[in-house]
Image (cartoon, rainbow, N blue to C red; front, side):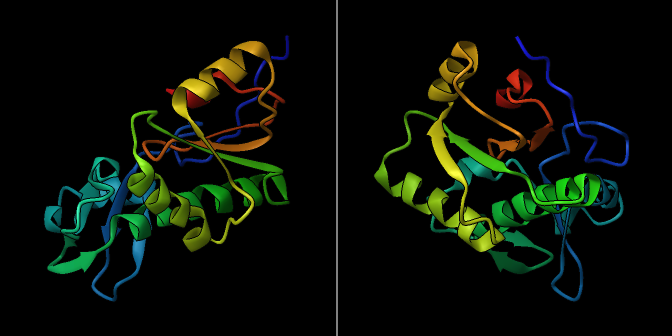
Length: 165
């Protein structure tokens, strides 16, 4: 059994980065720990836990500006992929996005937009229980980014058990 080799993608040398976004005055979206730090001084510009809002037609308001949940999730994914690329010197070989098994076709269709918006068209989409099963059976070849929309996780090994929770 291969042991995961985590890749640090955050400033605090963690393999998990916070699923937090911050909207700057100029409209730029900042993600992860830098966004989390800005929450103290500008809480109205910070968004967290918005994956559950996927499918809600009401946009997420950050600093008085509306943002689609898909675009915020895409910003998180793009940042995770960029950090892996910077750390490893090349883009991740695999990107796996998981979603709850109870999501219907509408939410899955919206979630499928996320990798396209993030510039990661080769991402594989599976349910969280499928991912758990494939990891347990050793059938999920991950060498790159595993991400559920809650917290991106990266690993160098061919399997990454910690990616799914």
